[in-house]
Length: 210
Image 1 (cartoon, rainbow, N blue to C red):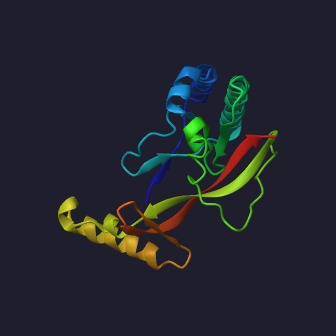
Image 2 (cartoon, rainbow, N blue to C red):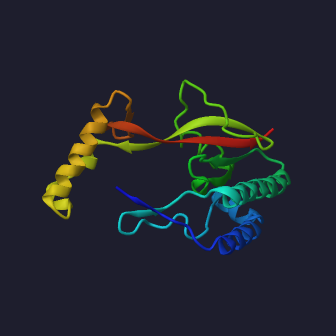
Image 3 (cartoon, rainbow, N blue to C red):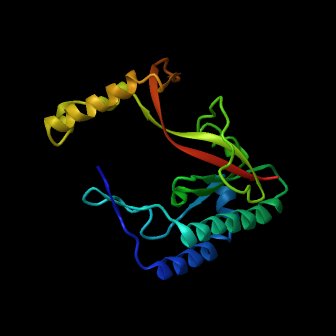
C-alpha cells in the first residue's frame, strides 16, 4: 500500500506552473503538421514522479490545483487560436482528471490523426456531469481503463520471484472474473483474436471549445 507524501515548497511549485504554462502556450505548428498530433502534460515536479519506496505525492490541492487548471485552460485557448489559422478540421481537448489534475493533458490532432484519440477512452452508457464550473468548455464523460489479456499473466521466469508471479496471476484472474470488468475482443489483420479485460481506473472528462 502506498504512503502519501506531504508536498513542500509551494511557492517554488507555483513558479514552476507559471513557467510550464509560458513554455507550453506556443504550439509548434510545423511539428504538428509533420506528426499530425501533439500534447502537453503537467510537467511539474514532484507530480508525475515514479513512486519510491511505496510512497506517492498527494494530488494538487487549493491554490496549486487552481493554478494547474488555469494553466490547462490558457494552453488550450492559445493552441485553439493557432490551430484556427490552419483553416482545417482539428481535434483539441483537455483531458481532465478531477481526482488528480496533475494527470491532465492538452491534446491536439489533425489530418490523418484527426480520429486518432476517439478510442483512447471508453464511453460508458451512463453520463456523469462535470464536477465543477464548466470553465467555458463542453465536457464529455469517459472512463480511463487499464487493459489486460491472458498474456499479461506471463511466465514465472519473467518475474523477480515466483511469489511475484503468483501475485500478478491472482490480480489479473481476479480482474477477469469481476462482473464490473468490460470484456471486448479484437481481431488483427492475421486473423488472431485477442480478448481484452478492461478495468475502470479513473473518471476523465474531455473538454472542447463550444
